[in-house]
Amino acid sequence: MLTVACAELAQVAQQVGATAATTAAGTVANGGKLSVAEVTNGLKEALVIGATKSALQAATKGGYSDNSRLFIPFPAEAQKVKSTLTQLGMTKQINDFELALNRAAEEAAKEAKPILVGAITSMTLQDAVGILQGDSTAATQYLRRTTTKGLTDAFKPKVQAATAKVNLTSYWTPLTTAYNKVAPFAGRQTVNTDLDAYVTQKAIDGLFVLIGDEERNIRKDPKARVTALLQRVFGNVNNVAR
Image (cartoon, rainbow, N blue to C red; front, side, top):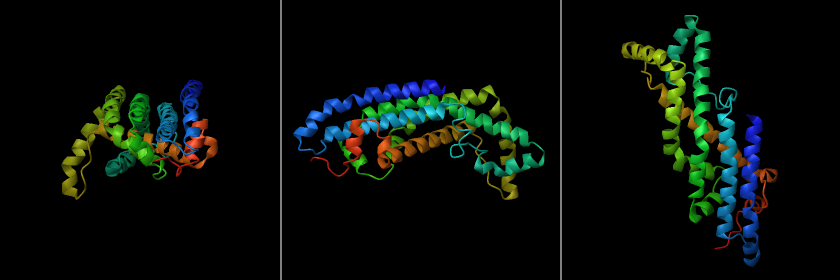
């Protein structure tokens, strides 16, 4: 899986790197300032590379389960349920349950790349300039705004299939439904019985953690700018031609 991911990233870098040659002449003609077109191309390169790398990482086995920042735990609002099960000696079942949640997210993340790339290719010139001169995760925020619905629609069926495969909902729904009936009488908050919605949202949140990491890295570290165009664009943020 890692070999495939590296090969795909190399292919993406080669494809987007070709853009630098098409913009070099315009840069010279513009007195060394960045043209708006060059800014747009540079940002698209950065986002395609970062989004592709992030999606591949998330979709790898262990992409969520082995990453403490992405790991999907027992739902926070159901900690009382977890505590009760732990007291009953069901620690292994809880661990198996959490692992299954994360495997579902990893499966869903396989759907991310085309949705992210589609949003990147439709970026306007105004979007590009604003993002380039924005904060360290301006591009990540743009992608979250423009792709969350598409990612949710694509992820949820994958999550549903994965959770159904291990019968997660057949255990979760009766447990939480019964808990919710007595929770108000004990002064406790009810829990969300929609496990698929919980995993879907957590999977999307985790994906954007990775994309944000990639964006900050490209903005901060010249070594992360893997093409000539990225080096020029992110090295001259405030030198855009108007």
